[in-house]
Amino acid sequence: MDRRDSTRMTSTGAAPKRTAVTAAVMEKDERILIARRKRGDRMADKWEFPGGKIEKGETPETCLRREMREEFGIDVAVGSFVGRSLHAYPHGEIDLLAYRVTHLSGEFHLHDHEEILWVRPADLKSYDFSAADVPIASILMKEAGAAPAGHFLQLGDLRVHLLDRGSGRPLLLLHGTGDNARTWDLLAPSLAESFRVLAMDQRGHGESDWAVPPAYRCEDYLRDLTALIDTLGLEDMILLGHSMGALHASLYTACNPGRVAALIHVDIEPFPPDWNRKYLLGLYKNLPDDYASPEEYAEELARNAPYARREHLRDLASRALARKGDRWHRTYDREILSRFDHYDLRGRLAEIRCPTLVIRGTESRVLGREAAERMVRALPAGELAEIPKATHPAHLDNPGAFREAVLGFLKKHGLL
Image (cartoon, rainbow, N blue to C red; front, side):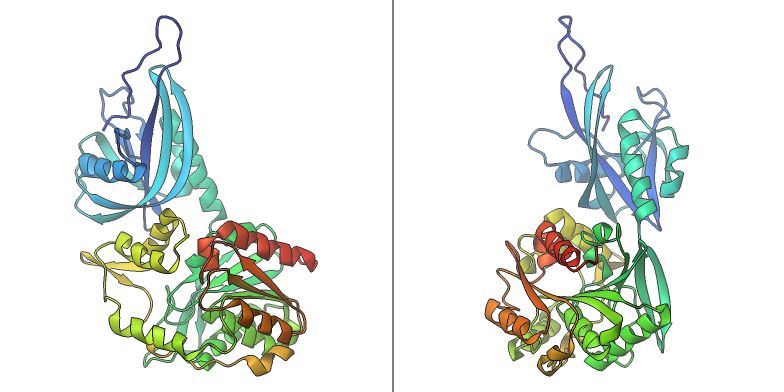
């Protein structure tokens, strides 16, 4: 649909009506879709991020799904918000809202555009965009410059994937069971302003190799973590882990006290009760093998992160699935659920002598307040932070408060 608004400046000089429109940021193979308007159009030959006017009663997400069907004949899932642009054209003011979208199905057919191109973010500056789209292009170019570099390390028989951004003291992030390195996307950019932030896809997760035959015991993960730290030569680092990743981070710190400057342990008991393992076994038996769309998987994520913003969960879901034909499959090995180890770190807590922050969501069932307080008392330099309006994935439910807790702890101990 054309983004034009029929409203003109009135004879009395009244301001034109503001029209809300959407724009789709679609990515494929590290390139972004841009489209050139048809000749004869008011915006003829200008490039844009495709989208259109939000009709009465529509949300931006509904509008984008409709526009992509009308303009290209494709179905999309709408993810996270990218940015906003306000521009006053002679014919009216445009309020442009850009969102990331994921192509679900359908072949591209051009109706409102002369051509489409897939362009690297750094090359967007070479195209003549309509004025309202220029700020969105700038946001994407800036994001690309600050985006983490993804690379692989060969650790024994497995290739392990790592996201790397920023510079300075190393800060290594470890996700929980069934997650991947992109679960830290709301936290890592802030940390990268002061640290070299490394986010690891642990074995069987994300883009890292699956273990064949399955090998997902504590010692397997710890061997990978040790090899990664040794290979990169990391010293005087900060370790931050969530759930299973917190157990690995804490155990590594106990075994290597001289290499860790500070530890942040997020929302799991050092001796997880048996119901935790039974819950994962239930998922192993009952989770579907695939999904119709990332949005369907995002709804599954939302059941465990009820306060998380839905657009962020949709974006996270799109990065946690791989498309095969017309279905979407999880990128983690199902076997990790059935092989969750019998962790018991209680006897090792006294060996963790660096400043340690234990974080729990105030509504978490995985790490209750009493268990968290016991853990803090057992740590020589333990502290407790509780994140309001948060469950087990506190970094997703309340990313702002989580970020403040992490940065405040690091600043308190002279690490920031």
